[in-house]
Amino acid sequence: MIDSTTTPHASVIIPTYNRADLLRLMLEQLTRQTQPLSDFEVIVSDDGSADDTADVVASFSERLRLKYCFQEDLGDRVSLARNRGAAVAEAEILIFLDGGGMLAPDLVERHISAHVGAPRRSVLGYGWGYDPRYPALEGLDRDLATMRPEEVLAKYRDLPAFRDVRHDALAAYDFELEAMPLPWQLFFALNVSMRAEDFHAVGGFDESMTGWGGEDLEMGFKLLRAGVAPHFDKDNWIIEWPHERDMTKRWPEMVANTFKFLRKYPEPVIEIGYVLCVANEYWRWEQCWLDLERWSQQVAEVDVAAELAQAATRIGPGERIAVFGAGGVLPPQLPPSFVADFDAALVRQATADTPHTPLHALGVRTLLEDQSVDTVLITSRLAGLWDTWRGHVLAEAQRIGRKVELLGPGMTAG
Image (cartoon, rainbow, N blue to C red; front, side, top):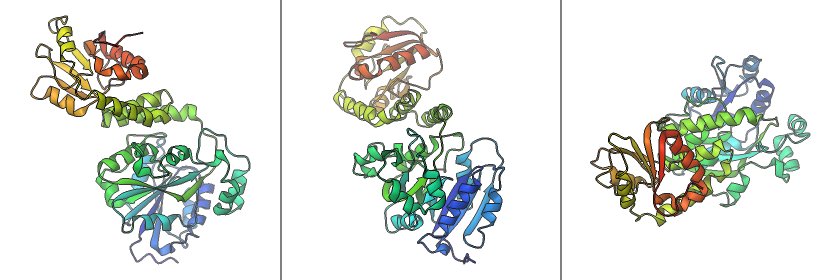
């Protein structure tokens, strides 16, 4: 019988759905952790399983500090499952794992140690076997069922298809996640920990994000905004159980959740990510963001008020206007407009004490409604981004407006 009278140092939260056999293997591996078993609790949060998940959990009640949460099956609600697990957690450190991960024997110990004496941080571990671009490795499921995870790792670790899908992106920064411009893009909840107080301070996982993908990125994003920097520990690993992933179903769910992400944080970095997800170009996100940052610096002093003043002479009475690339100065003759720019400081400056509505946006996907304006004015502040984003900006302008005008040098529709 495990001593459960003391407060655990960590709560391991495992969302699951109809994976009783895999859960049994996970719980078995948790019994052989190097961290004393009384030092951590295990919370299985069941998203409505119809198999014998509850019986599997009960069978470990004498070997682990266990809690079991169940919610009705109303579709894939992993965010809610994680949050419900966190709600009953007692420990100061929350460790979130996928329901099909085979665990390093020192996983819990490494997560706890990474937080002791450290600044506020989230800790991400490696996910061997997690790369949806490759088919499942032949024989891996058999080996995971009959061998210890560390033995399986030794056998497969040199195979490219066995590496974490994030490997190359992390290797480019020597696995120093803190050095990456968009570290939360790699914030995958298959193996991650954080302090409970930080988790609750940012509101947990977004329960409106259902289905697959996106909810963990949003968690990493808001943690970073709250001053909780991410840290990556390559030696803290799981092995994802091999299974075929129907990305034709999953990726649209990711796109839908990324749009919810954009609605919460309407700003260029998420706007770009959403458009790239729609195009299934997720791994271009960082480079496109860096390109925008460089261009923003180049045009920080560029004033397009003259372009807009000239365009204003062609605007009829009562016309509804949106401006993409407004800069920091607007001509007085411009009627009340939706004013967008990728530089947040400039758009605030341009619209201060005016009837204009500021939008911190590049213009590839705003939150304006379809056909909500009469004319969209696109200025030459977008010229350096035009080769990359022309099609997206024009499509967005045509979505929200009846007419589109390109202003200044270098701005052509072709």
